[in-house]
Image 1 (cartoon, rainbow, N blue to C red):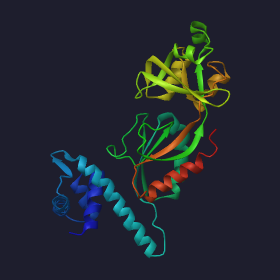
Image 2: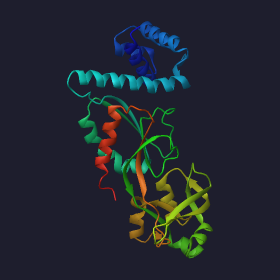
Image 3: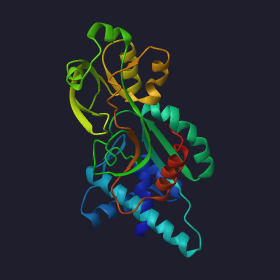
Image 4: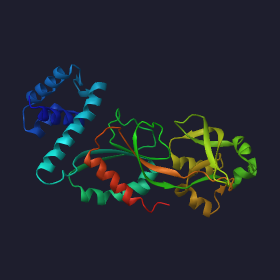
Amino acid sequence: MDHFDALRAYVRLVELGSFTAVANEQQVTQPTVSKWIAALEDELGVQLLDRTTRGVRVTTAGEAFHQRALEVLETWEQAVGATRGQHAKPQGRLRVSVPVVFGDRFVAPLMPAFLSEHPAIELDLRFSDAYVDLVSDGIDVAVRVGRPVDSSYRARILADTPRRLVASPAFIEAHGQPESLAALAELPCLLHSGLGTNQTWELAEGDGKPTSVSVSGRVSANHSATLAQLAIAGHGVALLASWLVDDALADGRLVRLLPDHEPPRAPIQALMASTRHVPSRVRAFVDHLAQGLTDLA
């Protein structure tokens, strides 16, 4: 068994989910692909795939091995490129998770230039405000606004953005304008789901020292634009990125609360699996985003 052929076949099998498709792509027979995968499983002593009548399902061990196989193949491609006196061109499938609104507004417009610059990359862009698990969900890069939930990932800050503490005029009329953090803690707040119904917000006073305040509320959502709309409709206090609420602040649909307490800026981060080797396609994508987001306020 040629290990590189077997690794390439396995990686593509995970991506395509079909022995026949891999065999056609690799220009070998289906039994040959099956023999390679079986040989890998025998050598590793674990089951990488569950075979069913409807296709294949990657096991937990298979998911971990898939990531390692990608790294091995990427390293090999770079070594070959270096030996030939050139850098390995970024290539292969790139799975990226981006927040729905931020991704649509800031990431999507950068993609045409990225795809033109890297024609060998197959881009799978997934829009979700859910906090994905990079390994189990097969994600190469997750772009997130704010602090990551899982600090074990490798993170690169691409930019940062101001945040605003806001509520609607109708909400303020009904509940009053909070004059302190203690008063804020008594108000119903709009929360980002996944972080629980009781959360801690940080606000910096005039001296720049951050202060934590525990907030709660009966409404939560995993979609930041929905939280902004709920705030405009008067259903609670929201802490959101400036690019989501500045238009509503400008036309009076929202009002800033506690202007002497500035929320810390929210980092825009690219999260990657914590491995020693970052594939060239991942580096190329993150570099492109960092350059494209330099003017983000």
